[in-house]
Length: 243
Image 1 (cartoon, rainbow, N blue to C red):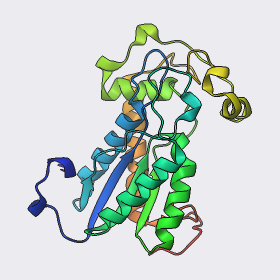
Image 2: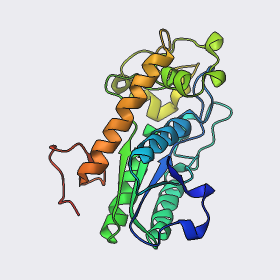
Image 3: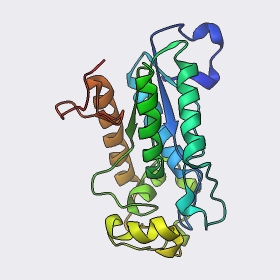
Image 4: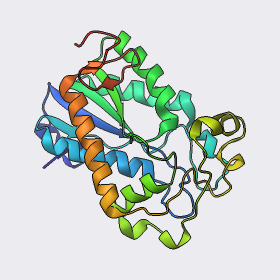
């Protein structure tokens, strides 16, 4: 059973040496069929499953607001932007470092990547033992498509509105990025979907979650960190020495 920081009393929390896992997500549109907290919900699920395997790990409350400016044209989206998110990550780590041994941010929203790179470069320069990793799926679609729909069907099917699901823009993300960055997601997909939820299933979502948890465990176990502060799979070239 995972140690959940929000449920604990202070004498139960170790005074040194703990591994703290911080889910990082967003509150943003996920098409007409998925809830606004999808990224946060998935990141927390990965963290909780990971912590069940690591006895020294503690699950921190999630960071539920991220850098989601590209989704701003959709009602319901709440973005705090890069600078505010960077400040939150930096100050959280400084505070956690007073009693935790290591801190890992587990990110569920691609828009947070640049912020985490910048924040962790600063924190590691300050001497903190901190890293980040992503909830990523090789060959998954970009946003609110089959991948995320399957994950949510596995994790919380009652909140998935399959009757409202529609196919969005299915072009590769790299081809969409210039227009997306200039004018936001709505400019390339009026529904907010980048991908196609058709064929999504709870079974596929379960396999995807298992793969995300396995990758997270593998990376934490190897503790190889690249120049961005990101945990990499063991055996890959790291941008700096382990510590």
